[in-house]
Length: 357
Image (cartoon, rainbow, N blue to C red):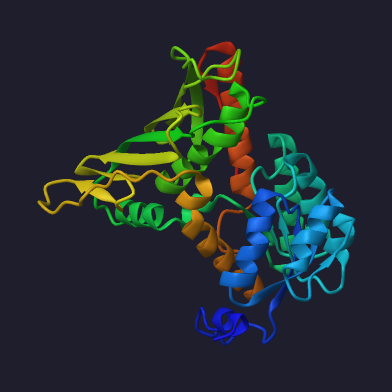
């Protein structure tokens, strides 16, 4: 079977999907962007990468050469406006996201933007308002933000269990986010903005409510911490519904990539992230076996989540819809992270400042 046949047969055909593939431009082909190009080419049906853009021309040429029919467009804004591009995947550094997402909205191109949506809450709110104006004119939304954990099968199972009332009313959430190591430039503030941001979105996704306040505690740092930085951190979220979420963020464990989430409810608890599927503890005597495997990095741990995320993005874009976290979710994450950074600096409980939805 050819690659094209494999890709075309991955999902059943939808009656309201255009006959031709979605033509995608990928902006930024570093580690994440290059992974996405390969993923779309080899594992996603209904899409093809027709253009890539990157500040490093040699890297862009290398990635484009591996995909038949793909060309390099040096200027990312030119790639967005190109007539042969239907949709855009943004994996450039965060400081470029605002301009690029706004260009996608202006030209009516569906966009999947890796987090962060923008570098601060104010500019992310600007994206929300720009998309709202577009939606008022067209009835369509365009922006998806790359919080891939929502598409992870374990998180999806945990979400379904909560929504079905299988744990009763959720009361507490315990999270652990651990990396083996980080680069020398990785600061404690980056632990909030680049790591804990995922727990921000997980909290909002699982509990269906906003985060109202953040407290950050600094335990004794590991000897492996980046010089002058606090690692690990203990972060506490208070939600608008009175629930509490604690997050252990530890990015220099020397072990591997571990992400665990446990929800404790009135009628039981459920835990994911043990490389064994969801483990539920309740009056039900059934259980689950545990394994000791630890993923080496996030691409292995959430590889399946990225596959599902991109497939659903492609399918939704071909239907003229958005299926996943949107611009508001990107804005909410930035607002909570801003409060988290302030709480880190001040050592005090910090309320989250957000506009009414």
